Amino acid sequence: MCTPERLTLVSLLLVTVPVTAGLSFLFAPVVLPTTALVAYAFWHLGRPITQLGPMIVYCFAGGALAGVVNAWLTLLLWGLFGAKWLFGDISAGASSVATLLGAGVGLAYGTAYLLPMLIQISTRSLRRTEAIDRCLAGFGLWGLLVLLVGIRFAQAYLGDVDEPVFVVALASAGVHASMFVAGILRWARRRSWLSRVEKGKVPGWLVCEQQRFHAAQLEGLEVFCKPLLERTRQNHLRVLARGQATATSEAYRKLPIAPKYLIV
Image 1: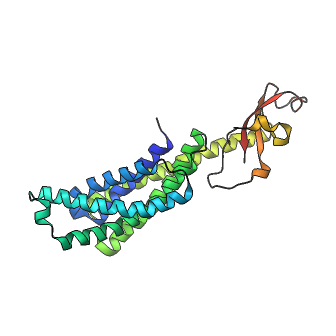
Image 2: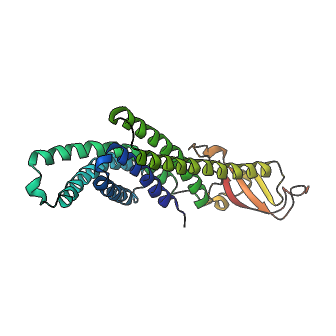
Image 3: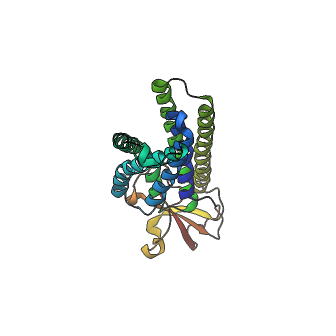
């Protein structure tokens, strides 16, 4: 089943793989498995975080630490592929350089991961449909931007991008573009339906002011079709309610109706 957390993980990995391969194509057989594993661990450990501040700290500090772990895992695999014992083959100087380089690269990755991890947090209070739409649109746009920047960086500083990397990056960009379009279209479709309700064109549904209901009736109601970009207008909340009357009935606004959702 599709969930915001699974979408977050898929998007992270779809971006991480081509960017990592583009920056270190010659070492991809060793670097890619460790980077994908560390990226998964980074996402998994960050899942319980629900506050903005701790998540920012986690992405920066955790990203640097994850980069160090990734560097050491890479050295380990490199030693195994070379059929040599790690500590007898890797000097202390090389280990120090790898640690510092890993921390720097990990910090860059953690910074890039900040936006999708924050999007994941922002979906915790939303209905599943709303959360998925926000993830699709947000991750789609994020993935396209990061892939574009990553490939351009590789072209500028490392020369031409290898064809396999370019194909994978193009495929990932296509997936993220599809995610973005799907998220926007799904949200726009519900927004269009809500506009028809506001005009009285959907029998049985009504948009009215929250003053019509008691506070107890509105407690716990979820927001319907929340804007993709966060904005707070608590003093202007309206209510999407459902009743038995039709939209053309003169008694529509006087008959009992049940509040179903809040509208921002």
